[in-house]
Image 1: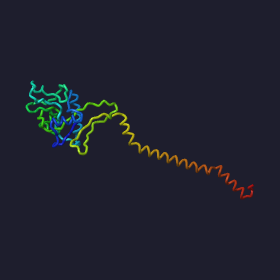
Image 2 (image 1 turned 90 degrees about the vertical axis):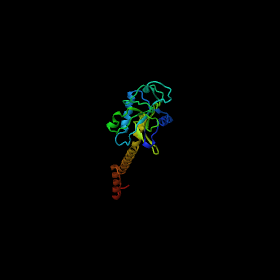
Image 3 (image 1 turned 60 degrees about the horizontal axis):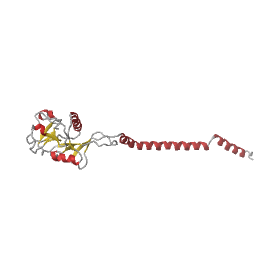
Image 4 (image 1 turned 135 degrees about the vertical axis):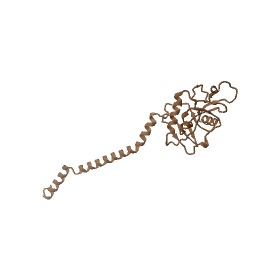
Length: 232
């Protein structure tokens, strides 16, 4: 779930971490390049022209403990906030710069000119943890074979201070329901038309039986006898 906040309501690293955990998730951790490419693809689809998504870096769950009790080279001190042991990194050249910058963002400025940061789109950069950014949460898959399967979609609920993207899965039965329900009015219309045709055909059939050739001839025959005095 990628949260796109307005500039005035973006959050710090710890606020982003707490927001993810409050919803049963964690700040994004990445195991390998394939997962990195998946996130890039999702963000590219969401920031196409017309989506209204603005520039803004994303907090991910990589950070450097600031207790001062660990030793070693600065890049080796970064760890995932969800406890992942993944050693995958996608640092931009000359990053991390360390110092007071202890929390990591995925760079996201798609409208930037090439000379102002465009070349390192989606690469990682360490930043001060109190800076305000968007963020991406990661959730464990639910073990539910009947869970709905849908394509990624963008939501913006009334009253929300952010936009979010949710990726879920869809099954066959819900999809069939979505197809069948819109066809119900058409099926009812066909049923009414069929019933009307049957009624009209039945009505015409009764009308013909009242004036069948045999009955008409018999009636005329009796009348003729009566007029001629031959009626017994």
